[in-house]
Length: 214
Image (cartoon, helix red, strand yellow):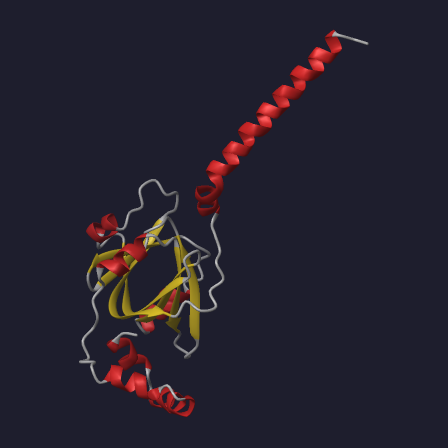
């Protein structure tokens, strides 16, 4: 638990519940160390972010409703621009513009990224802005994704307020196709080779039997 995360998220009602359920004492000691300063991204967060190919981002609508949207792309598409800033290219989607519209009203965002195979998750609180491709070409260039086939319509830049490494409990391990291939690919190739050898042996045996009829 990080100091600034607790400072932001532990509202009076949250603290009441912590008191009622017995966790307030430990969190209170943590909050006492907070100084109100935004937290920086360390190498630990940078490495974790570089490996993620998706995340979920929550924004706040003009009518007060929270809205959560999935963002996906090649691993590392959510880039660390500096120790206080993240950015990602926003690709063409279904043209609802809910998240983008919400950010024009309230820039606060909450992001969660999950490493399912290793049961790790990182939460990020920040303030986001939308960057236009025509007015900030240098920024867009930093967020380009090589030959990834998706049209960039804008970019989202997030000034990080707090990060939080969350408890790994209750995360069910899940694996992408690429991860499964990396894990079992060599064994599969060995099995394929063995099957091919057995099939060739069967063909040879049948040929031998046909050439020596009883």
